[in-house]
Length: 114
Length: 114
Image 1: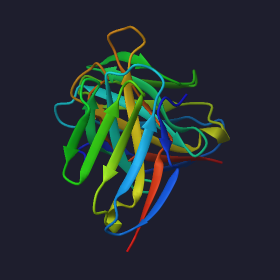
Image 2: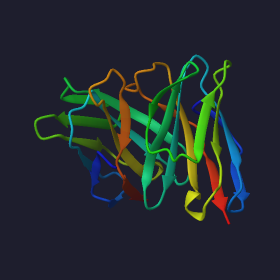
Image 3: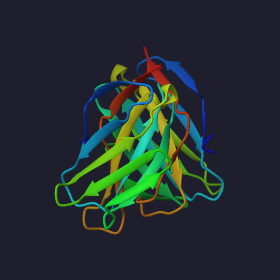
Image 4: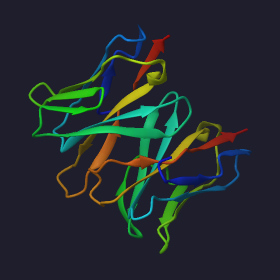
């Protein structure tokens, strides 16, 4: 079953605009990760934010995490056509043991129009 | 290029058959994860191996099995194939074994069961 739920399911913007995607989850987590997937290809890791962090930046990416609301957001600034892809959040959580499992959401399909 | 390799890229087979998918992790990574991605189920975690031993199990069917060899490559065996097993199968690797690290995905094997 999916732990992370991305919102919106699809987003279409113009090149140069900012894109914001949200992720909500249900259980406590060790960290939350964002991945990108170009159509039919492997996922690419973008950024990892730990449960004790509130914000993280990487280039044009900004991720926030609110553990009290069990939610995260991914902001892509100054989008480019090459950013067109599906974006997934994945939560690392355990069931009381020492091992964690990554659970992926269903993703947000971002289309950036030139 | 993530450094994770998967073979074959495409596989077409008939119901009832058995296939083996192969994965080589990034150099230095000890953990291998297998995922199944389909349109209706999304990205589902199947199983994790760490340094040759099974570490975590997800939604893996009894008809499916996996192993990790001493050279750290892994194989996923799918038997008694059904139409519903048609999907993209991804292998990912990470340096640690506890499952909370960022994962590096291979390009996937597209399995079509006819």
